[in-house]
Amino acid sequence: MKDLFLKIKQYRWSIAILTIVFFIMLLLNWKTLYVADDYVYRFVYQSPSPTAFPHQQRISTWLIPYSMFNHYQLWNGRFVAHSIVQYFMQFNSKVPFDICSSLIYVLLLLLMNKLSVNLSGKKHNAFILPLIFGFTWFYIPYFGQSVLWLSGSGNYLWMSVIYLGFILYNLKVRTVNFSNILGAIVLGFLAGASNENSGPAAVLIILLFMVKRLIQEHKISLVSTISVIFSGIGFITMMLSPGSQSRGNIHRTWTLIQKNFAGIYKLTFDKWVWIYLLMAVLLIVGVVLKKINVDTIWAVLFFLIGHLAAVYAMAFSPEYPERTFFGGVIFLGIALFILVYAVFSGLTWTTVALSAVITVMFGISFGPAYKDINLSYHQMRTQYQIIYQAEQTKDKSARIPLMTMQKSKYNANYGVIALDTPPTALMNQWEAKFFGLNQISGYRVK
Image (cartoon, rainbow, N blue to C red; front, side, top):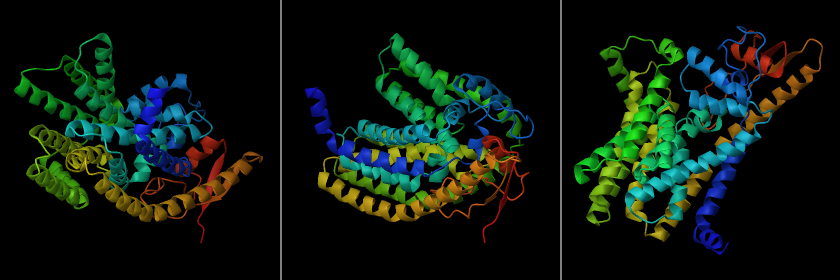
């Protein structure tokens, strides 16, 4: 008990900061209701069409493997992400997800911080945590879709803790025993199957560290070798999904790939150029002040390579929505904060001042984002009330006001498919099935 008290006292500022972050995320998750694909994943997956199977079975834990088999065959191979999504869609309340996903976001910050501390060789600094939070808040693409939306969060936020856990595990664990080998197999497979670009980029980062160790120490980790092999098995399993093969079946010409490369560069460079410049400045300052060693430089370089690989791998995809750059942004953040730790770790008052600046910037940004999220929340609550009333009527039909256009990318409803005016619209049919109505039609509020 005394040791626990001392630990809490030692990390009191970190605990306080992360607790605040947790409640911020809990508020935003609570204000975000079900969106788009969430209504589809309430049921055992059988078809993207709500009319193909009129009598669909509600999902439950034991039906997830069967549902994911269908999903694998018909839609895509991201069975790890969608198993998480369907697990939470079995509940009649979104609260379990809201709490767990808020904790996962905190875990993401902790993993970014842990990797930055370990690879910089510096001590933990609590006041770098707000800087990491600020980075994720401002730079995670389409924050609402990739963090707050239940289906999007399962695909991006939740997968990030798997492949970052994979990286940390392989950097830390070297001893060969049964439990370590089992951990390598499980984490490797899950990381490989996490998604099409960020998971493989995480594996690439570990391979680079393995090559560096082989050259410098003439040693290779059996644990990491096994983990990488099983990540390859996970990736191949995901990519061989008949659903993914049919949906991604395009003729990839060099001209198309070049066009995609140019499009990704145009979409991302202006957003990240200041991070690149900041990293260059920190690297020069760190070298001049002798706060950065060669190992730290290699670590930064490896995460930068992972960042670029995760982003530009999407040039080989039929499309590259911004939220798919989630992992690339996280790898960029780790590269940045390795340098931040190297330069600022011992400068407590400097990091306090920087944290204060980031907090003010976050507050300015949070106001309009929350206002937009809250507006959507109340509009959807109004829709739900009308739907609940319609459940009690004989014809089970609801006519509801449609949501106004969202303005903030922090809003999970921004840019995703939603209810429309005719009852035959895709989401109208899915929501009608979700709530047990015969039909839902909409009208636009003037």
